[in-house]
Length: 453
Image (cartoon, rainbow, N blue to C red):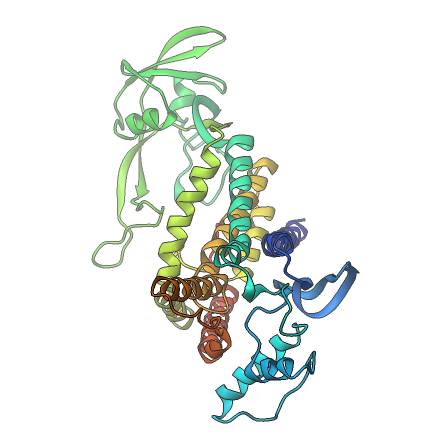
C-alpha cells in the first residue's frame, strides 16, 4: 500500500505540473489573442505529440514529456534582412528559404536559423498580426502573463491550504496519556511490568483533559505547558485541568529523562568530539491534540509573497546553490533543506507526502504546499532577465521602448525594431547552463535526495 501511495503522489505531482504549465501558457495565449497576434500552436510538454486538435488558426495539443510547454506566436522578432528584401521585391512568403552556412561559424549559423524559423511565421512585410509590431506595453503584458498565472495559481493553492484547510495547531487538550516510561535504548513500544508508570498516568491525567494552568500560570498553548514540564524534572507541579466541564487540580511530578540536544531544524547537536550532546529534561508522558485552525483569507496572498522572497533569494544564488548541491552529490554530505531541487525531487517529496503515515488531510495539505511552492518557483525563475526565459523577452521589449522614446525625444526617425535573434549565442549559453544545472539537481535528487521523513 505504501508503494502504491508513493506512486500516486508522483502521478499527482506530474498532473499538478502539467496544470501549472497549462496555466502558464494560457497566461501568454489569452492576451496574445486579445491583442490580435496570430498563434500557431499551444502545446503542453515537449517531444512527440500525443494528441492535438486545431481550433481556428491554433493547434492545441499535448506532448510526451511534461517538463514544459510553449505557444508559437507569429513574428516574435522582426523579419531577417533577406525576408525584408524579398517582401520588398513582391515575392511574398519566403518560408523555408536558407542560404546555407552563414559567415562567422557556428553561432552565426544559429542566428541565421533562428531568423529563418521566425520568417516562416510571417505573411509578408505588411503582416500586422505579429508580436514584434505590438506596442511595448502589450508585449510586456503577454510575456508577464505566464509567470503571473503561476503566481495566481500559487495564491489560490495557499488560500485553500491556509483558509480552507487551516494550519495545524497544538491545542491545550490532551490527546493521549502514556502508561509507562520506556527507555530509549529498549527498542520497543509496549510496556512491561518492569517499566515505571508515566508521571501523567500516575497523576490521574486522562485523554480529553484540557490544561488550564501549571503552577498557577495560565496556559494558552501546549508548548507553554510542555516548557514548564521540561524545566521541572523531579519537582511536583500543581496542574489545573478541565474535565467534563469542571476544573480539577492534580499533582504531577515529571520524571527526569535524558534526551539529545537538537537545533532549530531538529538535528542532533554534536560536541567537539563529534558525539551527540544530551540533556536531562522533565517528562510527563502526554501528547497534545492537534486541530486545524483556518486563517484569514488574506493569508494565502501573504504566504505567496513571503515565498516569492524566499525563492528569489535562492534563484539569485542559483549557480552557487547548485555547486553546493553538486559537492554533496559527490561527497554524500547533507543537502541544504532550503536549497533548489528538480521536478524529480518534487516528485519524490510528493510521493513521501502521499505515503506518509498521517491523516489524509495532512497529506492533502502537504501536497498543496508542494505544488504552491513549485508555482512560486516557476514565477520567479521565468522572470530572470535572460533569453529564452520570459524575463528576457520583457527586457528586449523594454529596450525597444527605450530606443523609441529616445528617438522621439530628440526628434529622430523611429529606430528599427530590436532584433533579438542577434542574442541567440547568449541564449545558447544560457540554455546550456540551465541544462547543466538541471542535470546536477536531477542526479542529486536521485542519488542524494531531500526527504521529509
